[in-house]
Image: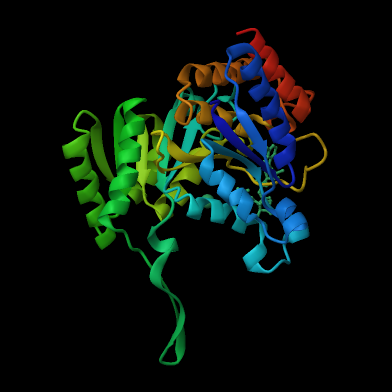
Length: 366
Ligand code: NAI
Ligand code: MG
């Protein structure tokens, strides 16, 4: 059977960038014999408009069956006043929760052609290629007790940072597996100096390392120092593994080392399925960008690179992932730019569709 892919374009620029990825999927089918069973469905506001919920049960069931899900973006002003239970982002949260996607991969990679684009000095980010692995389903965003309570004559807001050994061990494994396919180096970040969960985190990551991944180089760092080091000299890192809260902050920080939101892919992985592949959802980091939706201005590269991650992590096609990333690199080196990547007055921007076509042409030439 062909590998299966569920495409959920979503709202705003989601469908616009996904249309470009469809061109690339078709290219791999025609030119590389990599034919996918593609199905497409609704998520977010688009699903709410039709079903009254941001993710229909049938779509959820389909997501559980396929080899990988590729999502555009959800949300928009039209849906801002909806009840929380049917807000577009709840569709995405349901996918993450029911697929139990505990390992969130956020690469920070610098394309040479965009090395001037960062606010940091060029030598700090040129050639940068790091991966942040953020625990996504536990920690302080989910721990109980939580709430706003009354204590004496004032209110108190409470969240609980809570991690079990198995929750730490599984995301650690995900990071070590990844490191073996990259630079073979993991830095684990927590605050073991002031947090009990941090002490446990450090212990368990070390145990998993010693028992199962002694060949991978492991170091530990306090997360606040990690934030400093990421900006000071990010090339010291290969894979960083950290909890949900620190990962939220550190991954946004790392992402901006290299430039535009329109360039950033992500993957969220869960436990291995019967076929040995992890449950997986791939999506650009950006949202539905209502300010530019419908104008052909969106940069499709974040979504294209998310598909490259799918090729690498869900379909074992690392060479094809490299091929696609090189095509993106070539297009950027040729000076093809969507509006978000413009730096100098006098440059002209290409449209979303022209960027997609340029990537396909670069694939053809590869
Ligand atoms: P956003 O990421 O949609 O946009 C932030 C800024 O970046 C905007 O100026 C936008 O034009 C620009 N931008 C984003 N992606 C771009 C691309 N591919 N090419 C060129 N420019 C791009 O974040 P914002 O404005 O905070 O949220 C807009 C909507 O998206 C909200 O409804 C929000 O809830 C939703 N959202 C959804 C996410 C998801 O689906 N995973 C993630 C973040 C926000
Ligand atoms: Mg964040």
